[in-house]
Image 1 (tube, each protein chain N blue to C red):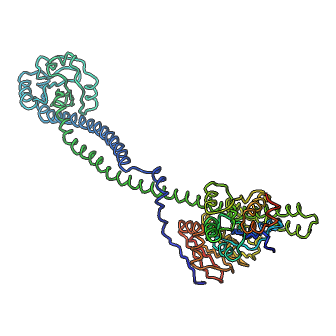
Image 2: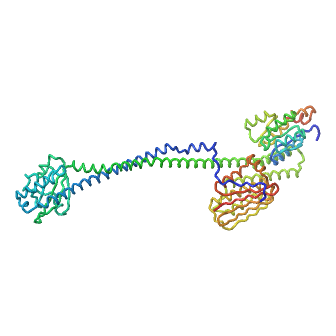
Length: 461
Length: 142
């Protein structure tokens, strides 16, 4: 290391540019309250949808539970109270046996929950009912009753009060009929039927509702309330992300602007001055030829040679700028070709050049691009400022990194010289430092007056 | 070089432009380029040393620009005439140059004949040459 100047670049990201970042931030701004409101509104819609679905499911379950209760009531009454009393005498219509059954039904079965009882034969004859006028009457059984007989399981259906066998229940309003197949003592299959008012079923349903509704509402409310801090956190993250994106965009815009200014400055300092000199030199020759009768051929030749040289210098600088504005396609031609083309401009400027690099690098495109940009800026500085006789570019690949060294034998510089160049608007190295920093790579410039300069770049890959 | 010659100093930060201007000035028989400078500070030193009649001064230069250098030169050498060379004709730049004391301005990318005409016309206003009755000034005015 040559010593005097060692610029080690920071790895942390660059501070945001307060002045120019503001407009981009405004355009990309994420309003936290607005995002929270939007998120909460969406959450509310979701909560309402969940609540609606849940209410429907709970209502369905509560109704099923209420009907199930009605069937359980009928099963208990039928098997525990009625079936033991279904003797042959009852089937035969014996008055005493029927009275005993009636007493048991009235005391143990009938209630506000069960308002009517009927016992049917498979043929549709009413063996017993607490509406005594129906006993001995025969009616056609409906599908539900017949299905209950054949399936042997409890079933239920809404009561059709228009049927003649139901004429005595009309005063109770809507009723649920529950059928339970039972057997008389002699094995005859009978159907025990209870009639339960809808009000009783509704009471059961409401009881189920009452049990499920509070935790359901509490759950949905908790879901809605919990999503507010979540949405707040999300909105803040969005805001941060938007801010970072805006800052990144602004940095890119700033870099692009500085690049354009640099290209403009290079055009002014290079080709424009060369061509101005060509114009003035040719004008001087024309003036000489106009005024002097005897032409000094050597003088004219020298003038034309000078103008020609300046024109070539202008062409060379324009070509360098073209490469800078539109770098070669590194993926197609490879880094080696690009570096050779880059060094061609150094050779045209009279420098000896050398490139050392492995045949295969296997680098990601970003790393290749950064290597090329670093080499480009370094070689360009050698040509313009170093007053060197040679420049060597070396690329090396290790297991986890790739390095670039651009070494010249020029005049070198110290820290003061570096500061002066930057204050005079030479921003190329500063732009490169930004790119290196953003890529998480490391760059070091070693130089001292009279001892040349080495630019070292290391990229972890 | 005789006392009657118009002595010219050329100031520009680009050596190639200075060389071209030197060749151009040499085409005027009455003019002699006597010195050059690469920035405003150097220009002040050269003018202090050589006392030219005319300074061809580039307006944009590092270290010290042409306007500032012109102001300093005119304060110390009021008889010297400064012709400002500019790359653009922006009014503020031209006004700044004239306000600093420049006798004239000329665009760098104009036809070289115009630069020569400007040098000649400005030479006619140099007090030293007027006092001497310089033939160049009298006979070959614009």
